[in-house]
Amino acid sequence: MSKKIELNKLVFASNNQHKVFEVQNIVGNFFKILSLQETGFSGDIPETQNTLEENAKQKADFIYNKLHVNCFADDTGLEVEALNGAPGVYSARYAGNDCNSTNNINKLLFELNGKNNRKAQFRTIIALNYNNIQYIFEGCIKGNILTEPKGNGGFGYDAVFLPNNSNKTFAEMVNEEKNKISHRAIAIKKLSEFLKNF
Image 1 (cartoon, rainbow, N blue to C red):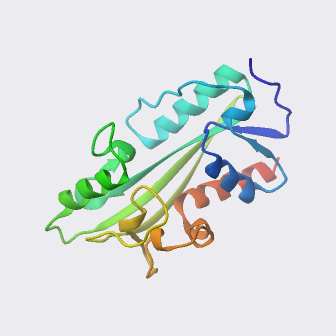
Image 2: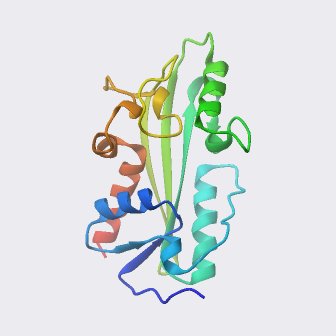
C-alpha cells in the first residue's frame, strides 16, 4: 500500500537514489523529491515506446495512475548523427538486453568505424504529471564520439562522449563538473524553474 504523499512532495518514477539526490540538489527546498521506494511502490514500470518522449510519458502516467500523486519520469538517450539518431531510445540495451556499458560502447565504436562524422548529442526528456496536467521538459548537450574511451567515471557512454567546448569526456569529469552542463541537469533545471513558479 502506498503512503499518502503531501502536496509539497513530488515522486520521481525511479529507484536510482543518485538521480533522486541530483534532482533534489537542483530543485532545492521548494519540493521534497521522493523515490519510488519511499512511496512503498515496488514493481516494474513499462518502457515499451519508440521515442524518449513517449517512454517518459508512459512511465509518468503509469505511476500517476498507480499512486494518484504528482510525479515525474525521465528517459535519456544518446543520438548519433551518422547512425540516424541511434542508439536513441535503445541506448541502455544497444548491444542486447543483457549487455553492459562496455558492450554498448564497443558496438557504438564498431558502427562508427571509418566514419568521419562523429557528431552526437545526449538528450533527456522529463514528463511531469502535476495536478492532472502533463508537462514536458527537455535537456540536450551536443558533442562528438571519440574513437576510444577516456576516463573512469560516469556510466553508459560517458567515456566516449566529448561535449562541445570541453577537453574532457563526461567520464573524465567529477560529478560537480558534469552536473553543471549535462543534458539531465538542463532538463531538471527547467523542471525546477517550473515548480518554483507554483
